[in-house]
Length: 467
Image 1 (cartoon, rainbow, N blue to C red):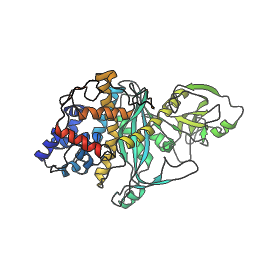
Image 2 (cartoon, rainbow, N blue to C red):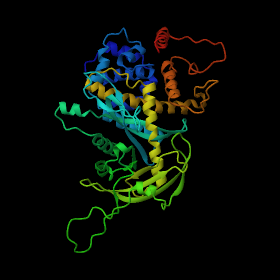
Image 3 (cartoon, rainbow, N blue to C red):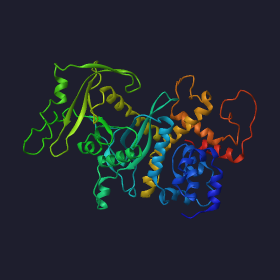
Image 4 (cartoon, rainbow, N blue to C red):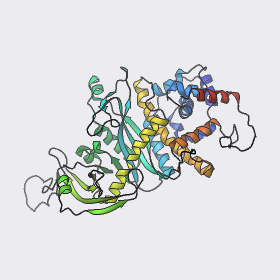
C-alpha cells in the first residue's frame, strides 16, 4: 500500500491521542501506513451518527476536502492485515478486563445482514429469524454471518453482555457452486470457529452455547473433546442407554448404543414422571423464574452418524405459560441449573445484534468488494466490544460522574450501550488535552470555554445531518 504522507498526516492530526492509546494493543497487526488510516476510520465509525460507510467516517472527521480519500477505502478492500490476529487480541483484551479467571461462556449464532445488489456475490435467500414465527415463514435476501461472542458480566450495567470477537461470513450455496467449491454448511463454519476459539483459550474451560441450528451430531462429535457444547434438544430425539460392557471373548463389532429410551415427548406427557422444582435467578428479561425439570444422561444416536453421550434436561413451566423445552450438554458432569443458566445467557446475543444495528450502523455499509464486505461487518461487531471496554475504563477513572441518560418521563436505573457510546463520543469530541474534562457534563455557572473553529464546524455539520 503506497504511503501518502499529507492526507494520512492530516487525518492522524484529527485523531485524539486517547483513541490511539485505546487501540495500541492492535498496533502490531497493521503496517505503519495502514495504521494511520485505521485510527481515522475507527474514530469516524464511532462518531458518525447514521451510516457507517467510509465516506461517512471521513465526513465526520472533517476530511471531505482532502485528497487521497481512496486510501481509506483500500484499508478494507486491498490492504494486507490479519483479521484473525485482531480477533484474538480483542478476545484477550475483553477477558483481561471483565473475566480474567474462570470458565468462559461463548455464544455462537448467525444473523442475516440484509443486502441487495448483483455485485454482492455471497448473499443468499434465508429464513428471516426476526420476522418469522412458528406459523409464518418470511424470507430475507442478504449475507449470513456467524458470530462468536463471549458472555461476561458488566459491573456498571448490572448484567451480562455478549461481546463479539470473531465473526465470519458463511456464503450461500449458490456462491460455492459458482466458484466450483464444496459448500460449507453453517455447522462446518461453527466447528472451525469453535476450535479456533478453543486454541486461543487453551488453558480455560470453554462452554459454547448455541441454538437448535447447531444441535447436530457431526458438530458434537467434532468439538466435544475440546469444549462443553450446550444447545437445544428435539423432543423426538432418538435417545438410548449407554452400550453395555463387552463380555470376554465376545465377537462382532462394538455396540454403539444400548436399549432405546422413551422420547422426551413421551416423558413430558407421562403423568408418572417425577418433576423437581428449580428457581433460576435470571431468566429471559432478567427476572427469576421457577421451573419444573427432569434430567438424565443418554446416548443421542442416528443411523450413520456418530453417537453422542449427553446430559439432557427437560423443563416445563408450572403455570403453563411457556412451552416445554429440552436442552443438552456434552459434559455429563454438568448440573441442570448450570445448563439452563448458560443457555439463557445466549439471549444476550440477540440484544447485541439489535444494538449494533441501532448504534453502529450494521446493514448501512455500501462496499461491493468481496474483501471489504468480509471485513466491515466483523469490524463493526468488534467495535461494540471495544466501546464497552473503553467505557469500563472511563467508569474506573470518572466513577459516579457518568450517569444514564434519563428524563422526567423515563427513568433508567442502569447504564446501557447507548450511554456507553455517547460517553466515548464525548471523550473523542472533547479530549482532555483540548478542553477541560468537565465540558461534557452539565454546568451550573456562566463560565465560557473556547472551542476550536474546526471542531465546532465538524460538530455542527454532524448534528445538522444526523437524521
